[in-house]
Image (cartoon, rainbow, N blue to C red; front, side, top):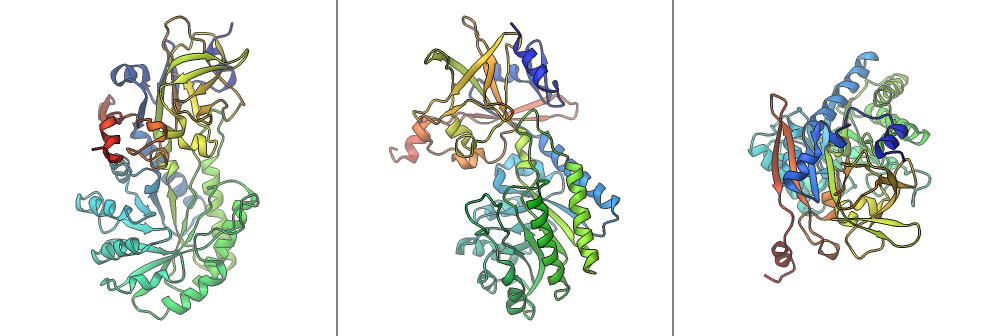
Length: 462
């Protein structure tokens, strides 16, 4: 019978820059995963910090190259969307690369204050404040404006601007989020977030133009599906840039657009996406529309959340049992839960790169992966490239470990990190891996597996 490594090599272009196999064991970014398992056990969350910097520097390079290619007159600014992962080590790694920050809710702002007080950001760092804002959020925004931070509130509704009148800051630069149309197959036509196109100019004339406290710095554009080479994406981007040109003619201080949504990450070994081409097309389209309208090209901000941190993450499980439930459905039960550890698998039917970590020379067979909760939806049985999952056969007392890769964005926040999970499944142990100047690995245990005492306290039993 063919081995598991035969299957992978015949299905994908393998090994890759990220993945290779030595002595039948998987390496992820040259990390010997079996060594990590032997040291920390499973289930185990892994964050590999250098991947964050690698992605930031890559995106900066392709946008700057595209600007140079088209002689684009304007600056490029990379923003990290904190909502993708709020962990301190993620933010600090990102900020090493001279990036700026985009926030989404009130409790992002105390993080911003902490970063400023610890000298991780300066008064030159942009803090782009997005989202629909409740009173506490606007209060916190006023506080950092009063501290002199480089904060740009992005207006999401017509009345929000009134909340900043009480700020003691002499001058406040504002942005406006423009409500985009959703994809044709979406459940509604226009995004609930932002200000509709017909109201943007009226808001400027009614509340910004003649108020010396304010100036309009930025228009914000967000597409929920991210940056895709589709007719829908280019149509919405073009519509937005035309609106920028219209407003620029009556608002000289407007000089920046913010493109939200972000680049996608690899969720399959067969993933294909031409990042350089997309950056060039964005630059070329914006420049062409501005030239057509005799308007100077704007500075460009991009907001990358998943792209920044997603591919730095991995989740490792042990197979703890095999269960043949009928003549053809074999289950590998794992020592964790997909619903609680990888909620996008359950909520969005998201697929991740899934590979065996050991036993690559064993024959393979089709399996279903089952989680520990009592919910029938706690399973994983198809991949992005296939409606099936194949893993090595397990003989006698062999241990089998499997890894889900590129899981670094959103999963902890969506799953409620450190809180109460379905069936009280604990949050897994979390290890942060970096590289020393000599290239060797440095490992730090960020958190132990959640224990019963922590859960009892949350539930009011202690």
